[in-house]
View (cartoon, rainbow, N blue to C red):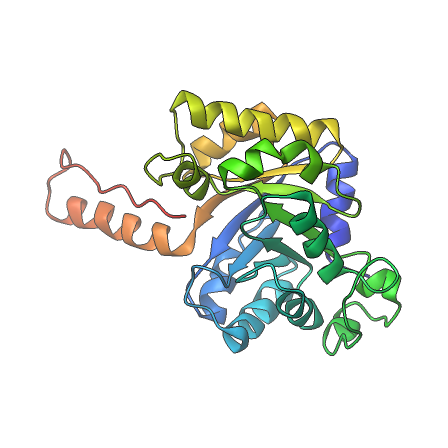
Length: 265
């Protein structure tokens, strides 16, 4: 059975999936993120330092802890999507989707004929899921697309209505950049807030899962309260230097010194 089924079961019950973002190319680092209660870890192949072999090691570490492994692929290319899924990843996050046609391309990369164009060769996926049935290794995996441009926001109703799409994931920093704003997380500018709300409402209207990247657990709690249901609350490459900054301040005995903010995309 696909590990992704645990997320679907949670969503079907009205729940929220909370997860982490992994950019350090290390199986052990990914394993350390899999604390009790975390639902998923997303391996970032787009902006992280992770190549395919790194991803495979990280994937094994994550699934070994009983956590759902997903990945952000480098681009909306069917061969990239299929190769990640063949390794046993349980879902993909596809960046830079601005039209329904691009969303349909992402879905097609996840599904086998007649629902898509994915080539059949689930080398490791068939072992992980204990099946070679296309309904298991194909239909069960998650397909999220990222709406992070002005055009994407304009077309979000059509994107959200794409058959076979599981959800839309917001990268607030890239969305900000697409709107002509500084690329940061946890944005408060009215235009950005309105764009996020529009994406959220489109997801709710078309019964797909709204997801979002947050800069902290506190921000994640606010996103959950708003209605987001796939919520990333931490990232390895942000947590490590932030914690070291904090402990360095304590070691120097300067409790009042500011700790640097460690944003991430």
